[in-house]
Length: 324
Image 1 (spheres, rainbow, N blue to C red):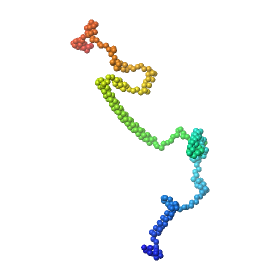
Image 2 (cartoon, rainbow, N blue to C red; image 1 turned 30 degrees about the vertical axis):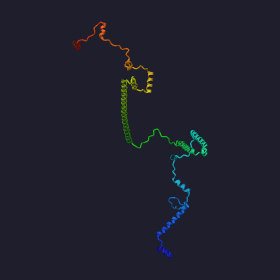
Image 3 (cartoon, helix red, strand yellow; image 1 turned 90 degrees about the vertical axis):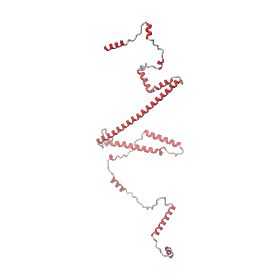
Image 4 (cartoon, rainbow, N blue to C red; image 1 turned 60 degrees about the vertical axis):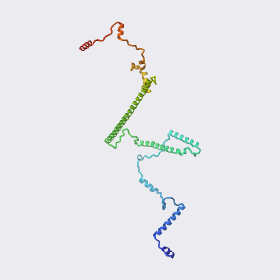
């Protein structure tokens, strides 16, 4: 209130530092708003950068002087710099490039939407041409460089009796070898144990399956026998089925090999099991003759039948054999 009354009376009023800072802040805000409306400001941090006009001088003499200072006068063997023409293009590579250009030109002519290019100026083929030029340039440098090295008497290949000294001692390498061999043996042992364990599991499973299969076949056979006894079934074909199932299946490769050996060395026939009875031989009774009683034969011939000796006589004969 005192400040307003003094201003009305025309007296000078001292301005504090706080009021001065407020006025500066308000003026800076106004300037920023005007600059933003004109499009001079962009989103983000804005900082005033003072422009300084730098004068660039190209002092050729000083640059040449500095080059002479840092230049190393080394022989060509240490530098191995080459300026040469590219190596000649291989025929197969030239043919491949030509085929690619023809194929690309056909694709561009067939598609009218794509702009027409010259195959030699096609940007798709420029990469391939550039890489080929790099390869040819490297080949030319190698060819000229080897000739130049041979003229200077510098070998370019490693001798056959080349020996490079190892950085580690033989004792250290022996320890490394022993450690590696130990790890290898442990790994082999563990792998062998794992395989044996797996084989045991597989063998046990196969044994269980075989036992179950045998029990199932036996159960089936008993059921068929019961049906036959009760008269439900009148044939014995299930016995033949069992025999057929018991026969082992022969590998065709093994059978062909056996046939080839038989044709080469001959086959004498089966020796084993010739006298074994079969179903037909056991059922054949055509040659069977009922034996006659020994007493009847002797009566027919007119003699007496052989009678057994008495017990006393048998004992005497037994004692006589022992004395002999």
